[in-house]
Each structure stands twice: as structure tokens, then as C-alpha cells.
Image 1 (tube, rainbow, N blue to C red):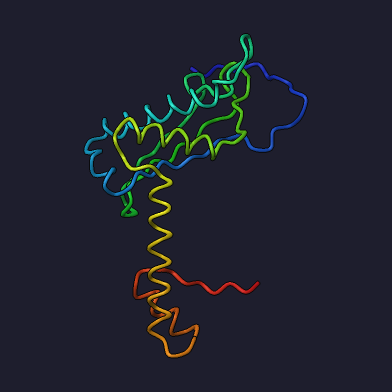
Image 2 (cartoon, helix red, strand yellow):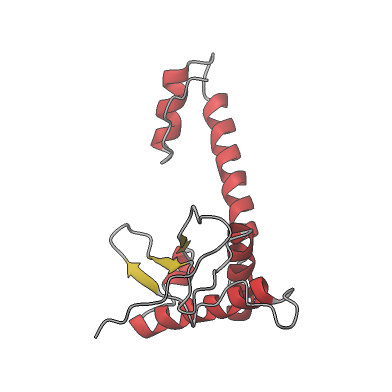
Length: 171
């Protein structure tokens, strides 16, 4: 049976009514998540850490900044892209009419992921990022060294052979 909720009025209109997050463990970490229950536990661990981070500065009596338990959300895990990951979509308006705040949501999501990584003994996201940048730099330098003179088409082909996508963007 559907229930109608009382409409709440606030001072200004909300422009973003959902919070959308992707949780994408590295291939090595994803391989450790073997069952749907493992993926669900991974999501729940992340959600707990995210709430801790977002709500730690709230003063007594103030509503929580983020409250998954009292919010509608949908989480979908899929494996068809070759990189298993979870899409999480959370309604910003909670069941009681208060709002989940999305201030610094990206930074907080990364902090939550790092907390989960640390508890599970996984590599931190910044380390993975730095390693990827180092690899890109090495591959780019190697491609340039193999050329007698710079030619965009040759450079692009060499980088694509190494697995990079090289779209041309004109500024």
C-alpha cells in the first residue's frame, strides 16, 4: 500500500535531488569479493564510513548530514564492463523530509573508501592514482623517445598500442 508523504517546504528549491556515487575497487580487490553477500558487505562498510565522516562535525540536536538508513536508495553491482563496480543512487530527501547534504561529497566518498581500504588491508586510492600517473608518464616518454621527430599521428598510434585512448581536443 502506498502512503502519501506530507509535503515539506524549505527556503530554497533543491537543484540536485539525488546523490550518485560509483564504488569501484581495483581488479585485485574486486577479485576478493566473490559473492553477492561480499559485495553487499563492501557497500555497507563504505556506507557506515561515509556516514561517520559526514556526520562527525554535527552539533547535538542538529539533523545528520547524511543518513542512509532513513533514505531511499538503490545500489546496483555489475560486472559487464570488465571492471566490477557498484552504482549507488541516494534520494537526498529522507523519509522524514529532512535533506541529505551533498557538500564535499566526492572528497568524503574518497575518505570513506580509503577507510574501508585500510580496514581490509587494500591499497589506498591515492597510491593507485599515483602509480597510474607514473605509468602514463613512462609510456609517454618511451613513445616520444622512439620518434625521430614529433608527429601527433605517430605518437597517438604508439600510445594507443599501449592501451591509451587519445582523443584530439582542440582548445
